[in-house]
Length: 184
Length: 108
Image (cartoon, rainbow over all chains, first blue to last red; front, side):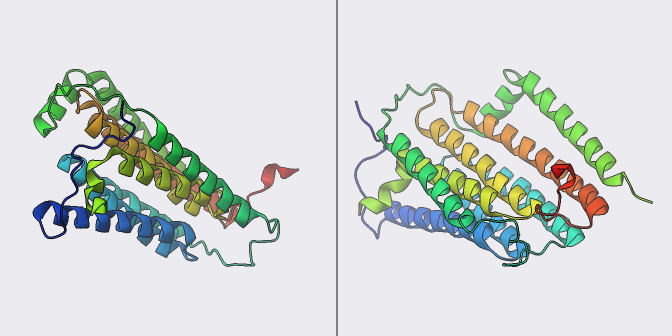
């Protein structure tokens, strides 16, 4: 019975290869958290999108540490390369400004602290849940490599694969129809 | 230096996922424009992907399933962002703003 699942328990010294990997991991996590703070708190939405891109770049590093370079690449391509740019285009077209005091007319002064305490409570609860649960480790059967991912995508998960392509097609058509409505 | 061994532990990644999720929830409540809320919802999806990848790395018998699930989450998130941006453009055409305080047609 163990509560904390660790692959190796021996802590490496700083000036070894493993220690350097640990330092790089800490830098990656710092990137994720800094980007998230910027994205949530920035006054101007363009800066929030920049924070989103920073955070997702760091998250690609985290995926690399989780032994999946393919997903790290996809994270960079889809989130940093496509979704952030899409949101930036949306900001350029609609030009929203979030000024303090302008949009506050219907807002209770408690809204900010309440939102913060909601987030903090969520974080505390999820952290305690993640640390206290006794996770059960199953013996490893497959491998992490991209060949296995491709095989599973086209055999075991082929139905979901087809469904997701239909969803994407419908999303493209729906986005075109929605954005075109009311245009003259 | 126990801090340098953090990348080998499941708990680290679960805490990262929890932090991303709570940033998303906080942003959803505190943002006043639809685009700000869309950015926050991306954080919630990223938290889910991080948890799937962490369990996939440390606990799962077949480490392919979590990666495929994360790929599907990415595809859904991309579709969601495209739809949300086009809805925003349509709303902006009708209201000339996307501030959530001004979109009150159904308020009576």
